[in-house]
Length: 91
Image (cartoon, rainbow, N blue to C red):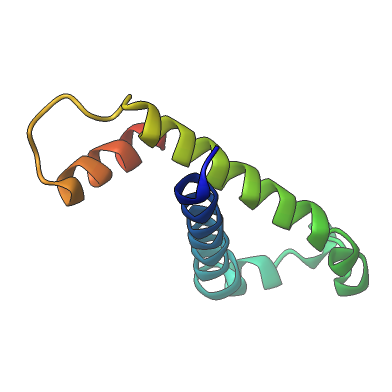
């Protein structure tokens, strides 16, 4: 493991966290508000936040590992298209 891997993992983990925030806290907020009996109260949710950070860090490590191993390469595309192809395979 080198510095590039660590930085890439942290960036991917942060991107995963922000994507989750955009989807769940902003886009689906009204839908979640209609079903309050299905979710924990806010005080209990905050206690689980550490596990959520760990999960997103592991997502970042996994996606970085897949990309760095070259499972998403194979064509002579520019890096941006290669990254997009890798992201669609990871989903």
